[in-house]
Length: 238
Image (cartoon, rainbow, N blue to C red):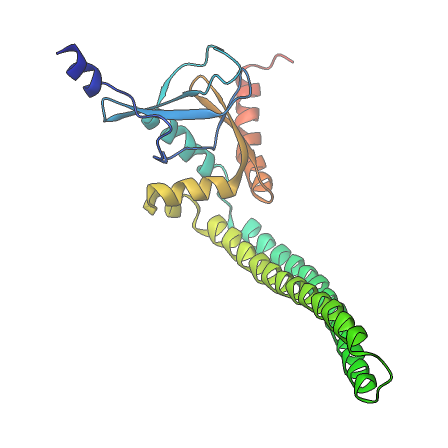
């Protein structure tokens, strides 16, 4: 009977299950990762991983942290004026990024063309008997390898340019849809959204202290400053 009871109350920890806040929070007391476990196959609790030993961070139910996380997203809501500023900033930023990648692609294509001209000239020299077959094969292998490397760099710049544009659009969409989008997302999508918005987040008992990625940190300054002023107003001591 005891064995059956033990199995029923066994916790699920680190067995491939990805919880809502997996990998998003760190412990305020020791800096370790906040991990999660499922108890009684129903309740999900978060706590310090205790990688450096017990630190006193309490177990927190996921429902409590969901309320806190929702506030974090709410704090990066933007008004129309800031939304217009973001649109302009993203367009300028993408223009600069595109110019950089375009310049790099032009230089790489020029390098590739130079090597190709060398290959053609070397082949003509081989046909004319000016170079040996052994020399030709060695240069062919060397230059083809260089061209393959250049093509890899070209592909990376093309992907980076496209990825940067997609990231900019994602930032704009998140700022525009904000909390409404968060509420309609699946658990995995909410986790990805939080990971995109937050660079780090500290858990102290049941309170989350966020570090936002740019430009979300700029959006958060308004609500956070308002809260800070409210606290100062209720307690005017320095």
